Image (cartoon, rainbow, N blue to C red):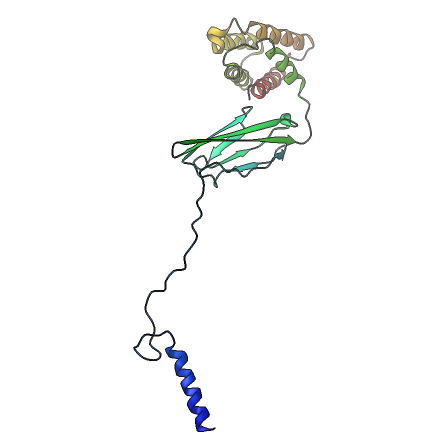
Amino acid sequence: MNLKIITLCTAFALSGLTHGQPSGGPGVLDKTPRQAEPVEIIDVKPGIELSAPLTCEVGELVEFSAFASNVDSLVWEIIPKTPDFRVMAKSRVAFFSARPSSSGESFRLVLAGAKGGEAFLFHQVITVKGPTVAPSKMQAAVNLWATLVPKAENRSAKLRAMAGVFRQLAESEIEVDKILDATAIANSAVLNGDLEVWIPFLDAMGTEIDRLGDAGELDTPSQYRKTWREIADALDILAS
């Protein structure tokens, strides 16, 4: 190889090793910390961000995620109230599932939060889709009785308390000839000072129970248990 070409190649190689290096000589690693590239800092504005669908199917488990929200605290509310709504993960996520009876119904989800002394409010409507299930005969009857006490205080709590009475007696071994008196006494106890307000409801219930008895549908313990469970379920659904 030509001596001049060898000399030029060697010089080129050495220049590549020493480019950008300190004066310590070729091949010496530069330990000087690399300067970080400037990074644009995005200012995340305070507020509520919700990831949620606008519709859901009956029985579907729906997740409402507020993890992207920039607030110090969050309070959730769903209207109308339903026992099938749960808030978790330090109020950053909620779950919802609709019953068949809610088909076609819309629920309003409301979130309230605060950041740096500023309050924020967010709301979204979710509509339940799916087959509409007609209420049972007992459910329809209980719904009708409830219209007789529209101004009763703590109505949902009282309905759940009466549901507990019917369910407890349905699971007991009480004799048939004593179950009516036991039911009346227990319902009077749970209604307590509101008993007078609930008399129209109780009278309508008594009329239906008498009708079932006259039709031969309350002759055996198993018939009573079945009917009492149906009443308990209907009361619980109405209270939800």
